[in-house]
Image (tube, rainbow, N blue to C red; front, side, top):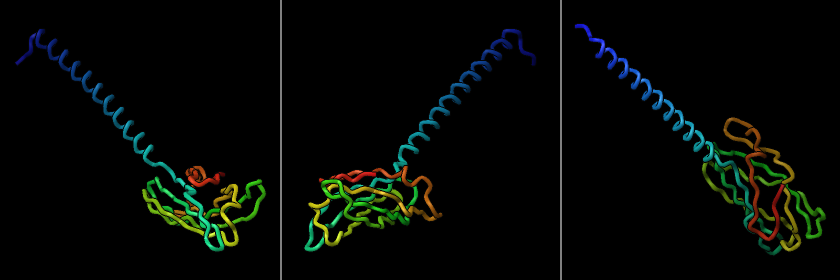
Length: 159
């Protein structure tokens, strides 16, 4: 069986149309994959650390920290170096606080007391350093860049 010239032209046009559809389909697939990758990266939200509240106890100021792990991996240890300032901006105290562990996609609350300190005497809390930030495979790279600080208390919490 031999195809006539008209049939050959139809076959060639059909093959060209198939290639055109294939190219469009590949382009659509590529765009879909890129959008999925952007969505996955956006879901990897980092770490947020919030000073939720301060409350006076008999002999201390009790601080509540909320750590939200929006990353894909657990944080096994997060040791923070904090500096407290009085309302006039004078340093009153340095503290080391362990905020971990917290699992991937989980939220954790850490409570610590600043003994001998009334909450009204704290004007600001500074995250001076992160002395330890580790996951299951060791140190988490760029931990400080992943950490976003905020405060719901009347006291600023920043770095």
